[in-house]
Amino acid sequence: MMIRKRMREGFSRWIKALFFRKKAVKIGIYGPPNAGKTTLANRIIHTFVDENEDVGVSTEVPHETRRVVRRGEVQIDLAANSLQNPTSNPNAKRNKAKLKLDVVDTPGLATKIDFRDFMAYGMDEEDAKRRAKEATEGVIEAIKWLDDIDGVLLLMDSTEDPYTQTNVVIIGNMEARRIPVIIAANKMDLPDSAPQRIKNAFPQHHVIPISALKGDNMELLYGEMAKTFK
Image 1: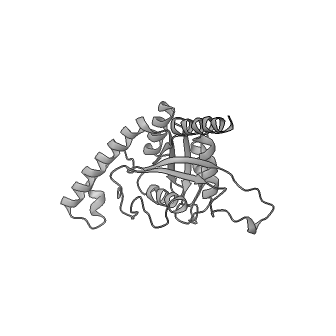
Image 2: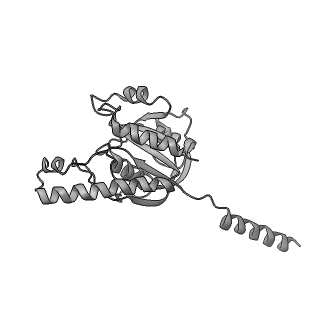
Image 3: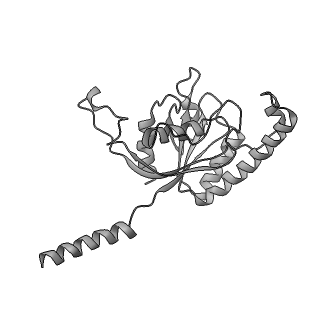
């Protein structure tokens, strides 16, 4: 009887694991060009998957990312990750945030893409026109992906005026689709950073100041993600 009971319990756990596993939520990283989307995606992968794996390449040239890139099943587990150092403050409470997600890095969204902007970076006219065409196609692809996204990390450059046509259109699109949004006010490490401007412009959303490049405030962002996107 005991053996049969254990077999039934084991079979029950197997069935639950097979059919009731929590799926990874698809989190899209959106924002205007050069806001730091790929840098943030790489930061997440380096921290929780493999420090030598990159989702994409970041450069100063706009629209370096021109196709959606998805990295599946990334497990954010702050309680187990070396991101926290309990020895630095033994009395501090450890963040136990957990979240299983697919990271979706998207091309920079823009209301207008002019090939002449790329020529300022040394491209000839033919290459600049090709880049502009690919970037336009990437924007269309990123918008289509919103139909299959569970939540959005919206990156904004905290050194720039947030109240732009692009940002307003992005926010309006997310709100119309009722997609959960967290705004990451990136580049807080720069001296002219002003995250408060973003908070003032979009007070209806959570705004987390971060530096995707330096890793500043990332634990706070991960904790907010675990609450918002669970």
